[in-house]
Image 1 (cartoon, rainbow, N blue to C red):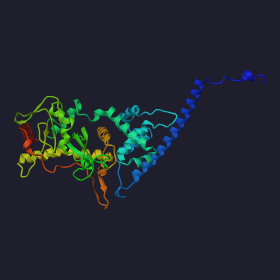
Image 2 (image 1 turned 30 degrees about the vertical axis):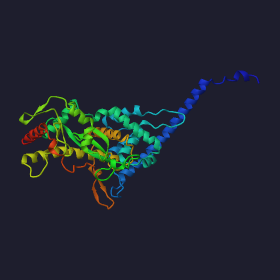
Image 3 (image 1 turned 120 degrees about the vertical axis):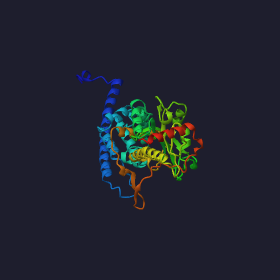
Image 4 (image 1 turned 180 degrees about the vertical axis):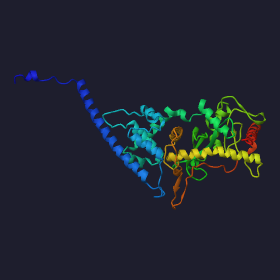
Length: 412
């Protein structure tokens, strides 16, 4: 046929074929992602409506979720971060660490979806089975999502719950000084996180005093309820003193590396480089100030104990806010013991960030309805010592520090 040879085009080269295939695949993948995001937005709308309209008295299985966290998860699904978050850093800073490679074989989750799922899992306390159904994500994907978000938060915002220095340290010290405790760096206590019976581990190791499986978390809190230090990972049968002895906090304090700056001179010429407040479950020392305890106390000792308890009340309020907002750590749940300490530390970072930007906390989240229909306050798992630690280990330095503080409190 005339003109046939001239009208025939040369076949595409291998490189050109590859370019066309890549372009087509990208367009298809982008369309799939947009449809998936649209489905996710619809699911978020429906789930948020259910959360906001559900009655807390519908039954004992009701699990309240912090409105602030629900709004954050909801906004992440829409790609919009609330202005209340610190310069939208949570999503923007974590995004580079949550990127997934685009391949021909799978549709990757978007960074905002990954972050939203992890926040929702921590805030709602839902099981992986329930939450994966709600989000339409596979179990393997959500396990990786929680792991990656945890690592990203620790990598990007690790300083949020680090031992205070600089201006932040001055703020902490000033707050305690106003309460009558100059050069105090925080309040220390332990809380238990309930878990299902760990696999391949002796069950008696994880039994706490209430015969429930748990993991111990040692936390230092300031008067703004912020977390300053976390040490976690030991089974529920481990005593608070043993957890303290195994922590880096104790090692640094004993080596003189924890408290920096010029010492403060108290009454009777007593000097202190720094200390924390604790209950009678801890041994008194020159860096840990505990109660006098006992009955029929002298008025000065009674005044000191009351003031010390008031200051340490920040611990219970902080645990209440943290566990109330992030209810996975309030209730028994199935977890990976290898990653639980990192997850708890990551939630401590979010806890501090929400406090820093003034996100309020609803105290109603700490109330629940039991199987008998009785409404009561939830157990925050802050165990009180069965009996005070023996004062036989009380050193002259520890006694002098406590007496000097008691003398100062007479004038506060």
